[in-house]
Image 1 (cartoon, rainbow, N blue to C red):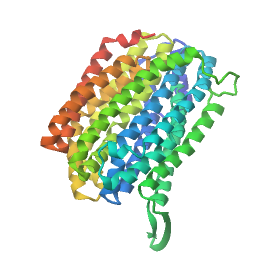
Image 2 (cartoon, rainbow, N blue to C red):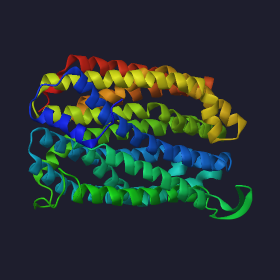
Image 3 (tube, rainbow, N blue to C red):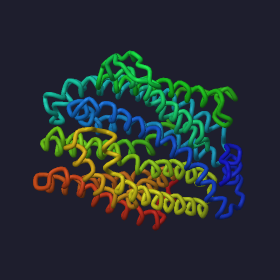
Image 4 (cartoon, one colour):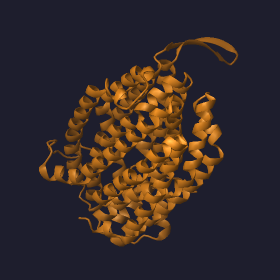
Length: 474
């Protein structure tokens, strides 16, 4: 296989902007070039969740359940940050595709102030509700204190997460997938290091036969989230520095401009990002309702549900990586007004995502005991987690269709209809089934409902993709 280099990627992306004809092989190779680094970035992000869950899971069921209880709400707030950043980064992709690099840099300047203010606002909201949230979610009193501290620390560092999302999104939409990928791998490594010293007590470990007294803060759940946010802080700082000082296209020192948001830029950002934010809110609201449905099933079910969700994310990370590539390819093709090429990139990315996630689904089914076994030594949790993963494995190809097609629609700036589709699918199909099956089948019923819903969602996204109306968005 050819070595993936940024120069070869830039050359192929330039063919889009310059209106040059591209062979099918060039289109597929460009898709691979953009997807592989993005998949690695997704892997590092998921690996952080996996590491946190595994380290905290070794402390017992209660610490694991306290993080599991907060997982859907942290996804909600993180998704809002991501939507805010995407509202601006898609504009940058369109401007680059049209060859207007100066406008792309102006959008970047305006986005920095806009998303920072947004990040501070939702950080204040998160911190203010952190003491009440575990009770609202129906968490057992034994885990509420740890869960509350976990969410408070997460909320206070949301502005950092917001800038990380903005910088990585801008670099990806400019065609640079390698730097976000490399820095996210660094973040994963830092997370392991910080967690190792913050979660556990001072202890003796054996290194090459020698016993060493390893220092530790013994903070448990609090140490897990502190390790994560410290790793995010280092990565966000490096990512923003590279974006603003070293990026060939988006280096802000090339010219001057105002950081004050303009009405036209904000209007476009709201048109793209607001439906995504609302959609993510209702989806995460549905996930929170799922947590409420699972909570009465007991601590073992809460922990197993959280572990299974984290473990499954290892399977669908290629889908989100390819979706990032789809957003870049479709965004620049739309900006260059090359509609036939836009459609081809859409089909290539969706097909690739379905094939890879189908293979990952088979692997998840076969190795479910090993995957869950790494995360917890508690047998009751392991049995429930394996059951959940094996149910979900059957939905992975159609889940890929929904994930990557959504990335295609985002690249085209068409976010309203897909948001409505996601809302209907999750609330009308998944939650109604989960609420009816959970009292009878327990956690198994919740995951059967999820599997059915993902297959339905993938089907309706494929129908919209083929119809092609999403390419008519201005």
